[in-house]
Image 1 (tube, rainbow, N blue to C red):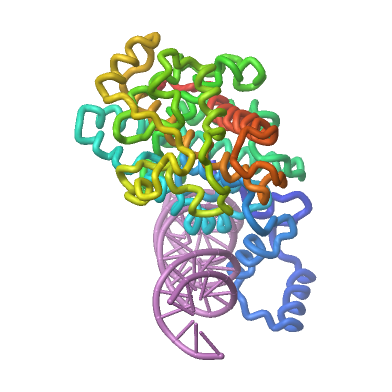
Image 2: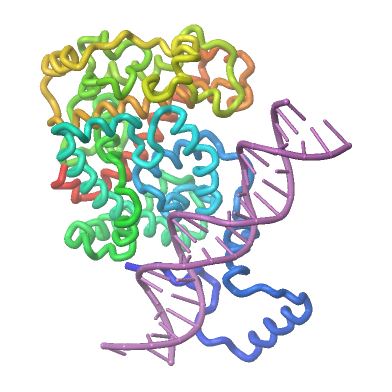
Length: 411
DNA sequence: AACAGGTTCAACCGCCCCTGC
DNA sequence: CGCAGGGGCGGTTGAACCTGT
């Protein structure tokens, strides 16, 4: 594997320069007096002048994609950029550093690991081993995804058209992806650059479990309608998001339901997600920005949340079960998931829920959805559409993960 | 209006890898 | 096979812009 040469694009020449080309270049430089090196010109072109670059505010969908792909891929901006047509890696990187990272931090989520900040406490107990294993798995998966991203890029070049980001993966690259991931599975070291890079960047987070568990979440209900992710492509079915019931202090269960429902199956999880945007007391809808994110994080790690009062933000938290109760609860709910998965299950639900809730709020702003009657963040029609989109979005992500035949013996 | 502090983002830097010789 | 040059990539910088006082 390796980077595709810059001149692989259709219609672009490669090979030795002809005298005519030399003359053209010289004439251009003479005429315009461009005192720039080639690298600078190239950067200017790729990051700014290219006609297919979309500029301006990132959309909600783009933000989601960035966050989730960052959870999967880490700081591999170019790989992330392949899923955001018309956005450059540089732009995504900047947007992450200036907006998204801060928001996650304010939510009490470590933007590097995508875990609740004080989740690190877990490392001091017996769970550290599991976490390390998962981190290792995530590195594999991360490398695999990068290979897929590369294939996506190549397919884009071949087709010459940009489709909407994620679905493209599942529609146009399925076969080749399989081949690639087989190779990756056979030899982790073959991922030379990506694996090397990942050694000096923080290990990819436990995102795979997030996604796997989300598959479990939506698998029962949504999978039937999802032709790609549905076919049992996964080697392992995570049975139930009930794992989330072992919420410790690390994550605040959102919006009622979690600690109270004694029957948290997949369906109820979806309802839970959907209801999360329908809390009363939402108060005035905030303009896009930081305020929207306040209150979604771990109150323990951010005093600001308690200052604002969670319920004031429309977050109808339950008092929550203590860890022991949750263990019992968990045991009662159709035994699932080894410890590690369960731990991450917490995160899955918590983090994703935070995002969904937040985006739900954002989505409710007139600015975002063009609807002026969603002032209270209520269950408008647009909102259900929104959640439907979220489901589809997540399914797309899951497809991305599940497209590997490796399907990982590691899971 | 002026200033300070904060934020944004295009450009640059340096490392690593690939390609061609 | 080894080397040099060039490109891709992630991290960092700093000028321009924004906001609050």
